[in-house]
Amino acid sequence: MNRLKMPRKPDVSPIVSILETVDIHSGERRVLAEFDHLIEAPNWTRDGNRLIYNSQGRLYAYDIAENKSQAIDSGFAVQCNNDHVLSPDNGRIAVSHHTFEDGQSRIYVLPLEGGHPMLVTPMAPSYLHGWSPDGSTLAYCAERDGAYDIYTIPAIGGIETQLTDAPGLNDGPEYSPDGRHIWFNSVRSGLMQVWRMNADGSEQVRMTTEESNNWFPHVSPDGQWVVYIAYRKGDVAPGDHPANKHVELRLMPAAGGESRPLVSLFGGQGTLNVNSWAPDSRTLAFVSYRLAEQA
Image (cartoon, rainbow, N blue to C red; front, side, top):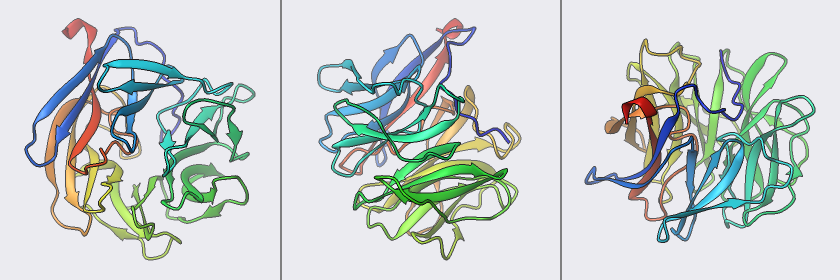
């Protein structure tokens, strides 16, 4: 099981990152920008104007209208991976930063416009994924005593609460917009599948059944849809989500039911690690990739 998510260094074969959007109803894809280096995991801001992404350990804000990126001052937190999450009011951003002392991921919170990071999870490794709609709680995957499970903790720091204890990797927790549920992915069935539980960890229910490895469910702002990334069975180990694979973004009703393919692309790690829904619940941002020699 490979859960380590250090910021990726430049590949031997340089990669082209393509920042795109897709309309979930028409299927129309739009390329916003291409980068001659690795970028990952766009968060759409609540005003619809910017996409926050990470690249080589740092955070950037891409202005959609101006087609321009600007670095976010994250203080000493310059080893951030693709687990960043915006607070509900968009005043803050939480990150998973690999501390220089031991190289392990811990969660920090800082102002979205830049500032000093505040430590939230002294215990490591901790990989952020969700922020409750009321702003009070963070949800994350953490390795404790050799097991990877889902935990919550007050956003200002405090005592963590364990929500899962199923064998194998439990990962990617994200709150529904009403705060009642946490969506996550778990390998407990043999393949990585999408699950949902109550916010207190009770009533854990499997939501996908297709023969693929499904990661990182993200709920639309209106609570109607869930998008996730699917790796073909046999392409990857169930507990791994590598880069540079042929994958699908799949869409399903949040109430449950059949999913459908939305986008097929070359990507994986970095494509859809965070919630990338636009405020209109119609448009989704993601990153596809192209190896430079393919350009």
